[in-house]
Image 1 (cartoon, rainbow, N blue to C red):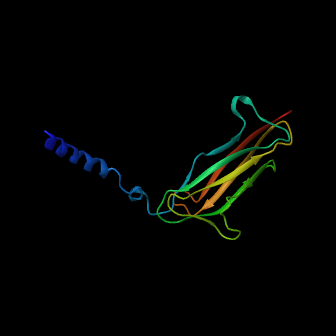
Image 2: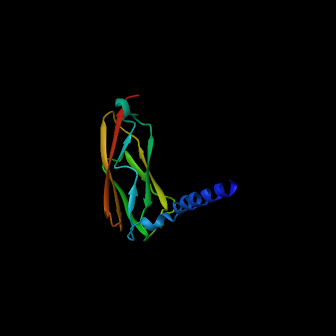
Image 3: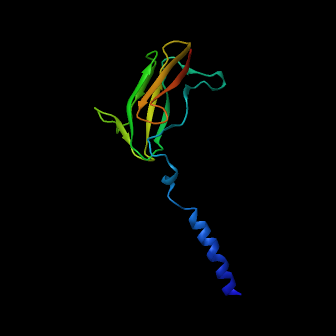
Length: 146
C-alpha cells in the first residue's frame, strides 16, 4: 500500500514542477512598456478635490515586459504649473532610463492647485517600446476652497 502511494505522488510532483518554469519564455523579444494606468487623477473621488495651496501626489508604475532593454528617453508634463513631476532616482542626468526585463521604476506627479477650479494636463512618456513609443496620460485635478 505504501509503495502504491509513493508512485501516485511522483507523477503529481512532476506535473506540479512543470508549471514552475521560467516566466521570460513567453515574453516578446522587443522592449514592452507596461504602465499601471492611463490617467492620473488627484483626489477626484466622490466629487472631492485638493485644497488650494495643498499638495497631493500620485505615482505611475512603469515596467519592462520584454526581453530587450527598455529605454525611457523622456518624461514630460504639458499643462498648468500646478502639476509637477519627479523622475525616478536612477534616471541618469544625461541619457535614457534603462530598464531590463521585469525591472520597474516609478514617476511621481504632484498636484498643488492655485485656484478653486478643475485642472487638466498631460504626462508624456517617450521610449523605444515596441508596443508604443509615445504614451500620453491625462492628468486631472480639482482645486477646492479651504
